[in-house]
Length: 532
Image 1 (cartoon, rainbow, N blue to C red):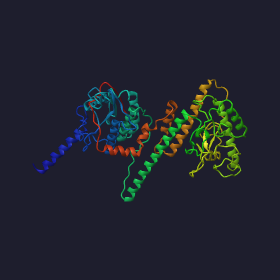
Image 2 (tube, rainbow, N blue to C red):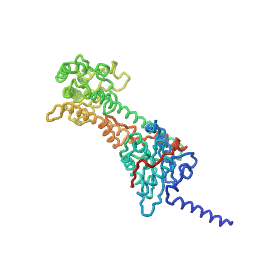
Image 3 (cartoon, rainbow, N blue to C red):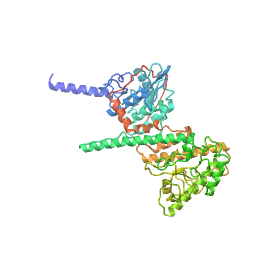
Image 4 (cartoon, one colour):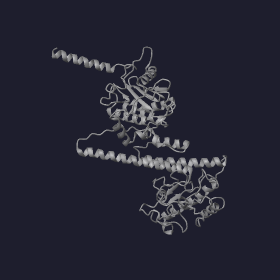
């Protein structure tokens, strides 16, 4: 054969291969998941992602195999699910193609469900004992996405939740970023199977890339990567701290926070009851009334119960009913107005800002009055050199550190959290409320906690805008109002923004899928699809 004929033959073969690759796929002709080379994953022993038309990036396929392996293993934030008499990891597979072979008289939307169920069963996605598999199918030229669930996965990922997943994928699909869309879908599926609910469009941090020519450029990129990981760790730590404090406020002392909502720093001095003596036994009918009246009058020391009149109430509105919310708010209102009045007098007199180690006249407080200067459990306050942060409770019930509220008084006359005028007391005792006392108290507590959480989350969002979005703040606030807590770890957008997790999944998935499919069926479960 002449060289010319050989070249022509080679060209025809390449053309035939290209035409075959571009041809619409059927559920039978689509590559087997065990044929990693045909699925666009050459060099890996196993994969859960089949992309024969090369629509996803290699890094995205690594990431997807890593995430799917974590879902199968039940690694946090993902969870194992019930299977037969025990528990097993859910199995997820991804099929991406240019187009499906649509039968005559049908449409892509009608073809996708049958295609997904047949391919799901052919690949055996899921455990044969419980059929806990999920298959995500994407046909880009048909503009169709379909998610099929086996019988054992349908309860954890019902059809209405599948529509949430698809809704989250649509922005990236419309932008033509199929890698980001599938990544969002798979993470959403994993979190949904673990009990989370996909919500919000979030932020896309996957399109970031960098190029370097000189060693200094690479070094700068490495430093930025380290800095981002450190910032994300700090963000996680602050969210975990906020969640713990909110849960403690709801279950123990709703009006006794441990940190300032403006700076988020812990108070360096705490009311004495946090050190062991809550004074609940004496904060009730007799002694508590005496304290409230003395603080309103502006004179006298806290009573023998050890309660600090300036620091707010000692009993939980959610659990302690010996003292009503009106009595507690009256105490806070009087003490808060007195505290703010002294702060303003001190600032007008030109005295230096910030609180000192003592509670005497040198710090701006009248002798025997003002917040306690003893650290919780005894001690010398900020003996470690930190800035002294004495708690000051306003009439509305929100507590701030003295330096922050002093600075706020320079520009505002309302509470930073609830925007209630500082000069006014609580509206707890105002007339016109026909609700029973218990319901009114519960509502007051719920409103107070919701405002406090929303404010603190807003501060964190401003501090870490790359990792916390306004949508996350709204989602977490709404979740806390209905459940009493918020699952920041299970939020899809927060997981996707974790630079360390991204690197981890890409690294672990570079070698392919760590699990294996166990013969599950795609029939008998549920599913849902849509277009974009």
